[in-house]
Each structure stands twice: as structure tokens, then as C-alpha cells.
Amino acid sequence: DVVDVATAGSKWVRNGSVFRLEHCPTGNRVHPAADEVFDATVQECVACGPGLECREAACLECTACGAGHYKSASDASLCIACPVDTYYNDTGATDCDLCTPCPAFSSTGNELGQRAIDNCTCNDGFYTVISNGVKECVICPSGALCPGISVCALDREGLVCPDGSVVVGNWSRRSGTQEDVATLQSCPVGYRMVEAPAESQACKLCGDTEYHIDPAAGCQQCPPGLVCNGTDVVDVATAGSKWVRNGSVFRLEHCPTGNRVHPAADEVFDATVQECVACGPGLECREAACLECTACGAGHYKSASDASLCIACPVDTYYNDTGATDCDLCTPCPAFSSTGNELGQRAIDNCTCNDGFYTVISNGVKECVICPSGALCPGISVCALDREGLVCPDGSVVVGNWSRRSGTQEDVATLQSCPVGYRMVEAPAESQACKLCGDTEYHIDPAAGCQQCPPGLVCNGTDVVDVAT
Image (cartoon, rainbow, N blue to C red; front, top):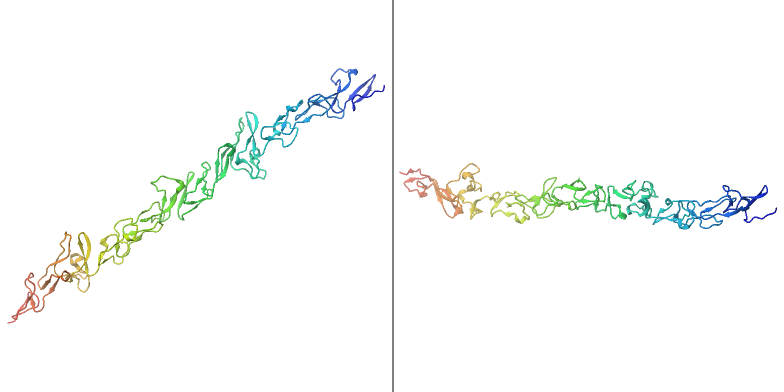
């Protein structure tokens, strides 16, 4: 009645007339099993077969290897964990080859015995995509990488990075489709959207030479007339210029005095070259809100390309056209004439002959000629030949019949005749005058001049005489 056990660790008990196997050591099962017909003659501990194990110290039966484990031998060994970077999502695996490798670019993070593909985490720089029902790891778009590290925010709740920051942009995963690759939909103001290739998708900060006011349009090149910082806030390069938002760009509406809008209204619009341009030589804009430059008015000039206004031609000059680009274009008044200290004169008619001179048109050119002494107004140097009706400022009229030979090229004044009582001095021209006959003369024929008074008459220089006897 003394027996030894064939399998160390097995436990037998007397059961009436026989020994009954109560349990076996780890890795074995009782045979026959509890659900089999009992036969005392075949009792033994049987090692668990492939895909089976018993982990108890007192084993009755073998159970299937758990998910993530396998066993290929029929022995008392326990199931072995699937290697790193593999998984098995069923039980009873009989071979290591049944452990499925993680998708490319994913791992189990050095963990053994993983039970599902969800235990395969995409490597840094990749994110999870379900393609045709199969999990894949796809390269993370550069704009979805967490700052300073290679963690892809697309696999994180709310796109929140480990440091609490959120990646920039509106990303769509097309949830519910077979292909849930992430797509960058839009970027906030101040960012340019890079759409292709897929791995380069990102919201890139606009540069210091750009601005951004329309998220759908991206960054815009800063024109010369603005100072940009990559956002929707800009400064003007020319103080006093006015810019307005026009769709995705800023548009120059008007410039300050002395400048024009570029491009002009009649030029092809290009938002990237807009600026206020100083008016060039011969041009100005006098408005507070300028659009374009206009030519300097007659009597004015401008030689520089700047915001200054046109300058009046100097005293004693004139310019009868527009757009003068230099002071030298201001024409000096004829000799012996002036503008009377007035600036900015527009025509030669604004040049008035000086006192003691009068206007003559010689070969179509205005000249100032010495006034004949007989045409000077009494007591002053004003020449009556330039005055309507030869009437002097005091209302008096100079003596004599003066002809201007109107309509000829040479309208020098000529004294034609003098009234009774006056002698006509004809030469030289500047000495022309009607001189009163003397007290010792008489005058009865205007064509003959003064006559000496004979001793038999008493004369007074006129045509009225007394007899001496």
C-alpha cells in the first residue's frame, strides 16, 4: 500500500480501494479530466499541450494561453509573452509566429505580451490612421508636431501637447470614413497655410515682410507703403496715408499732400507695389487727401521729386505754361519792366513797363521803350501812352495827337500834331512833345508851329494877339 508519485508535486489520496489523483503541479493537468470517464488505472499528470498552461500550484486542468501569449511545446512550461512590438488578440496561441507585428512605424514601447493592436502606439513623428479598416501609422504633418519634441498632436485629445500647448490650425480627421488622414482646413490670422505635400501641412507664421487679414487667402506680401510684422496689424510708411481692407489685401486709398497713389487709377492694380510716391519735378498735389499729382500751374515750378509744393516764379519773371521743372524756365520780364514785386506771374502781360517807359510790340515781342517827354504825365514818371485815352492818374490828358500805328509790328508812338499854342518837337523820339509857344510867339497854324511875334504885335503864345499900335 506504499506508492511513490511519478510526477513530483502531484497529490494522490486513498479513495476506497484505489488511489485517486487529486491535483498536479504547475504546468500539468489531472488525467482523466473531471469531465471524462474516471478510470483509476490510467490516472496521471499530463503536461499541458501547445497553447495551454496551468499556473496554479495545485492544477486540475489546463487553460488556453491568454491573449498576448503563446506556447508551442507539450510540457509543464508556462505560456510566453509575445515579443516586444507584437500582439495577439486571441487565446491559445501555439506558436510565436502567431504574435502579429505592430504596424510599420509603431511599437509597444518595450512592453511584452500585448493583447491588441491598440497596444501598438505610433512612433514619435507619426500618427494613427484607419485605412480600409486597418490601422496604419502615417508621418505626422510638420504643423501637427508638438513644439520641441516629435510627439504628434493628432493622436492626442484636443490636439493638446504634453506641455499643454495646442498645435495651430483647424485639422479635420474625416471621422467615420475609411480614410481618416488628417487634413489642415484653415489657419488663424497671422499664419500661412501649407497644404502639400501631406507631411508638410502646417500653419506657418507670416514673415516680417508680410501681413495677413484673410485666413482663407494666406499671407500677403507687404507693399513698400506699409510696415508689416506678419499679422493683421500694420503701420504706414508715409504718415497721413490712408489704407483700407479690401478682401484679402490692404488697399491704398489716398496719400498726404505732395504725394500720389501708386499704382495710379489708370494703371494695373498690384497690391504688392502700393505706396505713396512723392510728386516728381513739375508736379504737385495740394489736396489733404491726394490721389494723383497735377502739373505746376502757370507761373510756378518744381525741380525736386518730393512732397513739396510748386514754387512761385520769382519777382520780375513769368511762365505761361504748366509743369515747369526748373526756376530757369521762369522767363525774365523785358528790359525796363517788372511784376511790381509780385511772384508767380503767368504771362508777359503781368510784366509792366517801369515808370518813364511804355509798351511796344516789336516783331511780335513785347518791349519797353523810353516814354517821349511829351507823353509823361505832369509831375510824375507815368507814361500816358500805356493808359486808356492817354488819361493820366490825375485825370489830365497829355497834349498832342499821338499815333501808335495799331496793327503793325512796330507800334512805337509817334506825335502827329499839336493843338494851337504848341510847338511840335518830333526828334529824337524820346524828346517828342507839344511845347507851349513862348510869350514872344504866336500860333495860328498847327502845321506850321510857333511864329516869332513881330514888334507890331503883343503876343502870348496863342492865336490871340494885341496890336502894338
